Image (cartoon, rainbow, N blue to C red; front, top):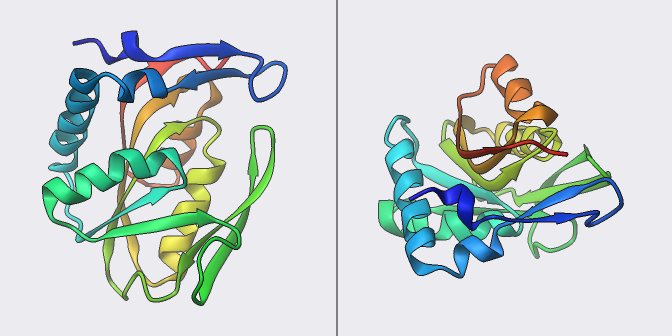
Length: 175
């Protein structure tokens, strides 16, 4: 099954000049979604980790299923002011703006090894912020797994240059 066939491309969303890769067409197809989950599980076996984290919000769709299958704790990396307890925060740049992500301070213990899952990587700003959250919490990043890599925006390359392990299922140009 070619998962690429299940991704819808929407021009000029969320702003002019962005070609948005929409995963809703992938997750609404039960066979394509199952295949995506199976591929992430297979790729995750390359890495040693004891927790899974995902970036709000589409990363939650994939990581929750992976967490269930692998029987690993699931950590939420959320937008600012969405978590009720004490948090670590990281500000970062997006392709089309700025944002902040947070994690509960009690989610990650010293020496936890965390697999980070997200639906898409573009410039890598969100992924780098996620890694910083894991690290300031005392954990280490085992690897990243993305469903989609917008290869010409070089986010994966940026992570690899910082010595992070990176996997992705689908490659698309970003523009």
